[in-house]
Image: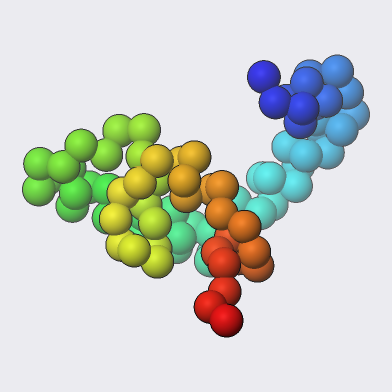
Length: 83
């Protein structure tokens, strides 16, 4: 279990505040569009016979990769910059 998970389980006030923020964030048009785009990409990949269960879509490489790799990058925006 992660540190933030433990924190929110122990702090009901903070959990309620986060839930309220998440609700407003997820109701925004750009977030809805982002979810819809990812849904279309996943649907097309499944239809093409690719196994996407448990994988994240990487917008840079345009492939499905493990969440560990996709979210574990360093640098601004999660990617290293070229020098």
